[in-house]
Length: 503
Image (cartoon, rainbow, N blue to C red):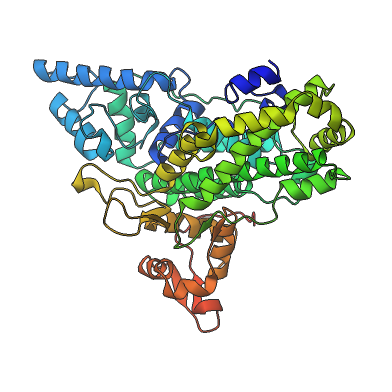
C-alpha cells in the first residue's frame, strides 16, 4: 500500500499507524438499536458459539421447529409450554417492535431479557455479515478503565449480572429454561476480555471522557439489579449503554479532529512544541454534543464530518510521510503524535514532494458525499446515532410506547418532525440513579446536569424546574421541592441499593 493506492481506495485500507491507534473507531458503527447492542453483548461476553452472522438463520430454524411441533401437537421433552403457547410467547409477550420499513419482513425479534434469546434475535443487519455491536461496549469498558486489570474485573461483574441466577425473578428463570428447551444454545460461559491497549497512562491523568463516565455508571447499574425485576434492570442497562455508546463515538470523532488539527499545523510550520501541547488539543476539557430540547443530530453530523476529513487527511499524510522516511508504528498517545508532528515539521518539503497535497485535494473532492454523511461511513454513523438514541418507531401501533429509555424524541406527531434531545422516563431513572450512586441523601439537580455533561449532554440546571425534564422528574417522584436548593429541587435516589463510595 502506498499513497497512489490510497488515492484509488481511500476508505478501504488505512495506514498501519492509523489503524493501530488505540483511539481508532473500532468497531466502525452501523445500524443498531439498544436491544441489538444488548443482544450482541450477550454473544460477546458469554455465548462463545453464537456468532453475529448465525442469528438470522437460528431465528428461521426456531420458527420452523415451532411450526413442526404445532403441526404434530407436541413439544420438546423438557419444555413446559406447548407449541402454540410458546409461539404466542415469542410473538406477543416477548415481541420487540419492528420498524415501519420492516413490517413485511418475517423474522423473530424479541426482547433480550435473557442470554438465550440472543441466539435467534438481535441481529443488526439480519444477514450473515452483521457487525458486532456488542464489541463496542467491550471496547468502551477497556477504554474507560484505568488499566487492563480494572477492565477485566468490571467485565466479570457485568457477566455475573447478565447471568440468570437464583436471585433473578421467577419469570426470567422460567424463560431461561423454556427458551433453552426450544432453542438449544451454546452454554453460557464467561468469555474473558481480550488484552488490548487503553488510553496512554500519561494522557489518562485527570482526563474526563464518555467511556470513563460509562464505566462508573455501569458499576452503579450493576449494583441496582437486586432492587427490581430483570426486565426493569435490563431497561436501565440499555438506557445507559445507548447514551454512552453515541457519546463515545462522537468523542472519538472529536479526538480525531484534534489529531488532524495538530498535524495540519505541523505541516504549516506551526506544530506543537511539546507533548503537553498535543494533549491539550486532543482531549477537550468539556464537550457539548447534545443541547437538551434542541435538534439532536446536527452536532453529531458536524463531528462525524470532521472525523471523516481527519481520517482522510491523516492517512494521506502518513502514506506521504512513510515515503519520506517516517517509521512510527501508531498514533496511540500525545507523545507519538508529537513525534509525527516533529517529523513533519522537519521534513515538510519531502512530504510535499511525495504528493501529499495533490492526493488529499483529489480524494476530498471525489468523496464529497461521504464527507457530508450522505453515504458510506458517515451515513452509517448517523444511522447508528439516530436509531440508538431515538425512541423506537414501531410498525405496530400497539407497541408505540414500548421504548421508554430513549434520549431523542420526535418534536411532533408527523413522520417529518425533527428529532430533539429529550430523555424518556427509564433513561431519567437510570441517570438519576447513576448521578447519586456513591452519595448519601438527596443532592441538587445541578449534580444531574454535571452527570449529563459527562456524556456531552448540556442543560442549564436553572431550566429544569420549568422544562419537560423537571416535569418528568416530579412525575417519577425523583425530586423534592426545597426553597434552599438550587432551582428549588433536590434529587431523591430512585432505588434502595447497598452502595460503595466511588464518587
